[in-house]
Length: 342
Image: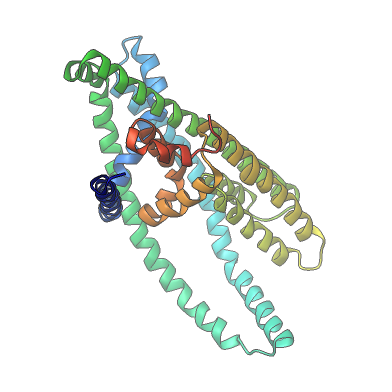
């Protein structure tokens, strides 16, 4: 390799590195724009099969969309009422739980480590409520704004997306348009498969968790089941976090019983199988993504877009892998991201 070719390689690598850093900066800085856009695109994929099926019977796409949103809203309101009731009961009983936790922790540190922690825990107790309420208010406004933005973008997508195929055919030569359609179809299949598989696994995890908690008489079983369903969308970490709260509550609720240990065993087995084995295996095999890549993508997208990024980590990474596959100079990245060589 000549000196000139070496410099060209260095310049190309530097350009890619600068572009990647700039892209991360843009995605993080403008997340208020990108998050509603990406969420609306994913919802568009979710509703597309039903919308297109009914469109064959001359039912307007926008009407179908509003009907679907209405049904989801009603289900959401019904579910929210149940979850809200559990949360209110939990908040009502929390002072008792908190006192028990602080008392046990203070006694443990005093007896076994000879450390006085009573004043420290009292400071945490006094600061907790105001910090939580102020944070909750700010997040509520942010979430409400993102939901409105997402719905608005989703409506515009459904008003115009059926025109895109004809626009692409007109904008590019026949071979090029076929190539573009092939990539788009590949992306469509990946996203739809992800949504279906992930939702089924998450629903199963939530159902098993809720039923197990109910059988063991652990309070707020519906809340823990819903939490398990929701957090299972976050690879690996979500399934672990979901079982911490019901297990901790069981130790408080049944301090001198075998039930907490039985609950821990059952919930850990459920999460190990559903969240740490079945889920990664199906996701990895379906998208041919390495588990290491999934974990790295989880931390990366969480850094860029917070909790929403954690939920979107796998499909966004699968999307990048498809893009890398179709760029000759970046194809090696697609291979390195794979779980196995196809």
